[in-house]
Length: 448
Ligand SMILES: Nc1ncnc2c1ncn2[C@@H]1O[C@H](COP(=O)(O)OP(=O)(O)OP(=O)(O)O)[C@@H](O)[C@H]1O
Ligand SMILES: [Mg+2]
Image (cartoon, rainbow, N blue to C red; front, side):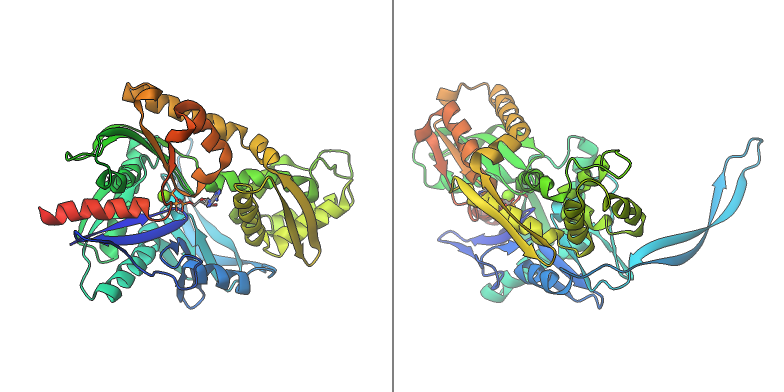
């Protein structure tokens, strides 16, 4: 018996189909949609592990608003060997010192799937333990398996696991990423693991209810990637993939871009007391809440203390509060909510009131659309390539099935409508389509 699992950058789910009805499972009672597990993990000092909405809540309670206390710790000595001028190498001993936040209560991990793009990412040190990326992914997959087993009272060992069209442009990194997810699934207790591309999974549910043979595009725009396929579905023969296209762009990137709108509140364009501009590399670190935390390290204290007497002391004070009180994650939650709001509303207010960091900013949908110009272009190009690979003309596509949270952004829907005609763009449930399709594929495998 194969289940389907959609391990998403932002949300994960599991489904089972045994010929009659598609079953989804309650995975996270704390989440707005309990059938979806937000792909978040929080690990505290005692290595207690929390996942989903509880992980987010606990991080907000235990870590947000807390000042990091950086202390240097000596991890011992290592032997360093360098080639000398002659034939004999020079060997010397070097102390390994690391700066750690000794007051930290726990670590929050978000978008672990995106970490697989990095050829060097093996995992992360959390207090006194190193967690491999396989272990971190296995934590989430185990939760999915156990919740499913608790409902059906049977062991779940076979899985059709979704994967994006590409993890990376580099085929070696791509293969490594899939291997890591495979190993994670083994760690999570699965024995038979079959991969299927997420957008192809997405086509299966539609296929089942479609009498006529059609060429459709699945446009699956999630938190980490945009995955597309042109596929022949419907009728009595199995779906036939014509072309696929993957883009390393997702909702996480769209949220990060919106951060630019707030730079003006954090000393953008300000000058140091000597007239030099406030360093741009500091701003570059504001595009992710994880990088922001780095700015609270002692090595940045000097830049901040100088900037405080520069041209925008209030902005710098806000920036210091943001990074020194670990408010980045909370701010990013606000940015994400604002982004989502702009999918239905023409304007929204981004407001934040936390100690000395308070501001209100009106954001129009048009502002957001301007900010994501480059991302729009990436999507347009990818659609061109997909169509080119398929050898089909737009009028030979009978339906465009859009799924994934980011496919709700109106400007992308407009672009699709311009290409294929508004009546051909169909929304399919962003939270069940992919996983449901993977479960259907699993049913086919179970029968054989
Ligand atoms: N209404 C909306 N408008 C715009 N963006 C949205 C909306 N709803 C959700 N999102 C965004 O969609 C993303 C999550 O979508 P989804 O759950 O489909 O991703 P995922 O499957 O976890 O990721 P991936 O498939 O890329 O690994 C988040 O970035 C979220 O901010
Ligand atoms: Mg997805």
